Length: 586
Image (cartoon, rainbow, N blue to C red; front, top):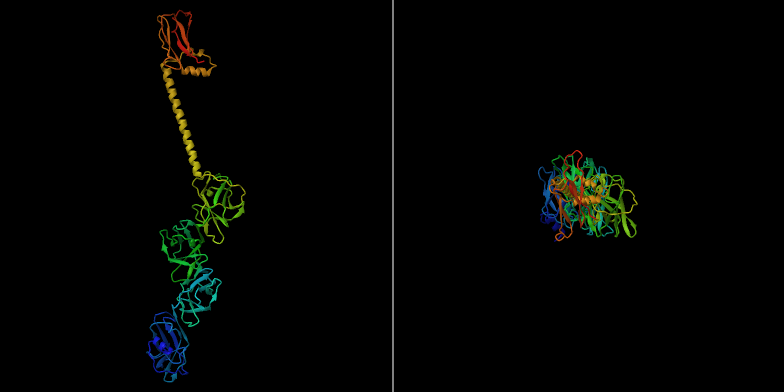
């Protein structure tokens, strides 16, 4: 099939008579494409040619052909004609011109129109340097690249609907073909959404699929939102993570940006019960690629104006380096306010930076560059002086400079207890350069548990001793009430308190009676029944004259002594005999 026949079939025509264009003096017409000059493959497009009201017919030409592809009669009011293309293909792509005929002759050719077909090759990538967030009046560089050997790249701005810039490709050291497009200054009054295409030299009007759209956000015009996470900045691979962008301004949409990438996540805003607007960006499940520094922005629909960036939020992914550092605390985990505490993080593996993290802290952790000492990499984190805000649980991690947001496995948890600040967890400590040696101790709640246990045992022992003593006192008082202590016990040697105590323990009950026939003292030894050989004695009243009878009991012998009392000078009857037993153990 000849090229002219192919072009005619593209317009739905058959071969007709040739119409030779002749230069004329009439004003040249205007040609355009509807809906645009860049048409996806297999879709329709209409080419319009507009001339004079005196025009009788219009002719369409394509570069590379010496004759008109189609001649159409003018449509009322005769100032234009249309040339439809039902299915856009690579054959239909090219440069087109038109002219018209009037009673006075032929007009000049219109300016050329480039008709492009897209979707013939795989799409390239489009990124922005340094960030898709651009301050008002700033400049950026857009980079279009592909591993296919395209000869050139075309950058289009969607709002204009026509090619904006064309650059020949260059091969990067990585082997990728790419082209750089400087853009700016960026102003808030315009929309800044771009796509790029790749094409070869022949035919140049056959382009690839479009890249994903890239929108530039003009920031700093509105108030900045806040970016936070309930899970904390240190996360593990596989867990759920949600970043919340909140603002007291009623934004319609929010965007999340990660430093060093052109990826820009956008979500519609929502209103919270507290009257804030916000959006929740889910990064679940967490992967190593999620580590980095994030900021968020707020904006309104149908506008390129965005807020100032939020404060940055670092997301650190643990378990990405194959080692576990150790964490030590000096002088110990329990300290008083005003003292100095040093946390030492060590590792045998190569570590560029150590990170100290406090459980429950909302902001990023402390970082220190490592030092190599005695075959170990280490860093000292000092809290000086200690305040109740330093209390809490700490862990440390290691990282390397090529991937600062990917961490090692966490160290063992170390709890710091500031006296008088149980449960008080504050912000991370400030750093200085301590020189104290490290030591490690148990957690503060273990100390509390041990102290409470010891106090409970001591109180229990004291209570038991008090109960035993009270019971013995009760028995002793009952014995004294039943058998009062004789008055003459004062005859015992007061210089022997131990013996007296023993005598009180071994005191024998003696039955007091009025004297009748005398005093009879019976004694027996129950040595056969009692292996201790204790001697028992019993005194009974008799008709003997009034006297004082007592028995002194030795461990093995019993003696009776009687001492006669002189009669009373007043003639009164003598006092009742006093009978007692004195027990002495030698």
